[in-house]
Each structure stands twice: as structure tokens, then as C-alpha cells.
Length: 218
Image (cartoon, rainbow, N blue to C red):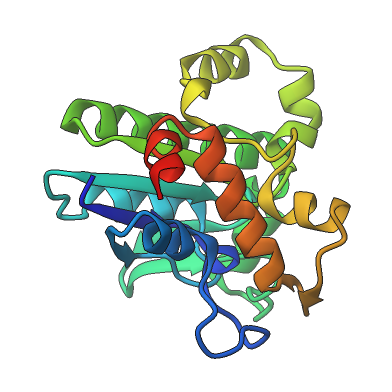
């Protein structure tokens, strides 16, 4: 292992509640294991953007991809303006693409869950074919708590079965953010502070076969 490369949204980035020297948990892991670190995470990223970033990244030998999947209600599309991301909190202008999407296909749980599962499968298959070791996480519980996941039809069942869940680290049956709330870690706004990130780094190093042996040596 030479480098950890992180992909995701704002929960795996620094935020205003961090003090000088504080790091988000993927960077803490890299620091503890004395390997290089790179991040392609961006605030308000959608799962489709996260997948695109993984598939277009110039991986090097010895890289490990750490991918934190985000809200299922964010989407990214290629338009005449380039890659355009939309989410329910920011699409509000009248007659916008976002308005039409969220009043149309984007309003349905089926759209959100099925698209999220497909992005996970595409990314998983790409990384396996490229021979890149990877760890998947969730920063939320949206998929596991959805009616569709718990009452799947034949198509959703097939998507769920196509995912290699052995590559996921789930924080005591939760995504990172809900786990932080259950553990009563401090937050700044909607994002957990450094204590939560330190605890998450410990959890991932302990649970991941990629890190456990090396973590015990440090």
C-alpha cells in the first residue's frame, strides 16, 4: 500500500468545526499508516459523481480506494453546461432542470435507490477489473432504511445481490453520520467534529483487512 485515495462528499472532508491540524478520517488513516493521501471528495457530491470520479481517476500501483457513498436523492447529469449536479436543497429555481426532475422521476424512491445501487455496482466492477483494492462506506442510512431495500422487487433484489457487501465497512449497522449521532459525538452544524473522525479511523483500521495488520504494527 502506497496511497489512500478517498472519494465521497462533505462528511469525509474538513469543515469549519475542525481546528488547525485536524484531519478527516480517511486522512487520519493514511497518516497513521504512513502512506500518501489524495482526496477527490467534494461537498454536495452525488453518488453518480462519486462513481464518475472513481472511474476517471489515474490510479497508481499500490493505491487503495476508500469510497463513501452519499445521499441517494442527489444526482448528476451531463448537460450542455457540462456535468451538472442537483439536489433537493438547491434546485429551487422555477422551470429549472432540477424542478422538472424532482417533480418527475426524481420524486420516486425507486429512482433514488435503484440508481444508487447501480452506481455502487459499476464502481465495484471497475475497481475489481482494474485490480484496485477498495473499501466502501456509507455516510447515511438511506438505502438500508428505504422501503424498497427492505421490500425489494425482482429487479432490486438482483441489484442488491450483485453488490459484494464484503467490501463494505458499516459502523455498527449504520452509516458514518447516523453512527456519530448515536455515539453522541459533537457536531458543527450537520457535520461531526474531530472526535468522531478519530473514532471512525480506529473503527475502519480495525475492521478492514487492508489496514488491520498494518495498523497493529504502528
